[in-house]
Image (cartoon, rainbow, N blue to C red; front, side, top):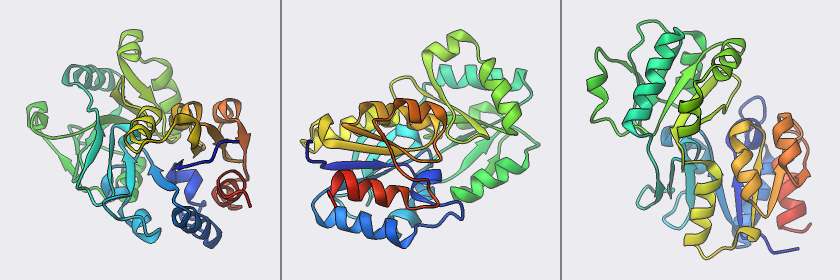
Length: 272
């Protein structure tokens, strides 16, 4: 087995348990991996604001430690000094996603590193939950022109799970082919640059660090984790992962309420 030099870890449903906590066992495993010289990279659909507390709690803030945000749209050092990878949603694809959301009467927002922006005058409970979790204040704007100077990476439709199932199934083929359209939770559907994904960002970062793909490990639970699970030398599905992740992964660990991340790190990276 190749030595693991980089571990890419999703946050929600993976690193955190259902109470949104990092368990002592998970924190210990991450610390031991870092002390062993392994890059532990938090890799999430969240913007930078939604990762600050997590990387701080894990002691991962430094100019030689890295984080991947916006579902792979951005990879940068955790002190924000250096961008390694950055792929924003092209404006024409954003306009198509917006037009589709409006046609479906669905709520849509975009996220920068400081704010979420929407044209919708009405939202839903899942919007409030999303923006609270990622710590983004919501700004309601009057015109799409106001977004021209906003450095957003992705657009996101948010709503009831059944509604998101319907909306996802109805995305026009052309938009689906030209954008990366993915679910990161049951309550959202995200539109990103076609070449932006957790897997591509992870491999770009690994390449910068002189790490081979086979020396990487990725741990995740949701559809948006599939690219990094596929790209990694060892793809690990959480016990609570959706079927697609379990089918794609090389191995499966315990669920997020039973130290799944710690068990995977100990077994496959620290060889304990």
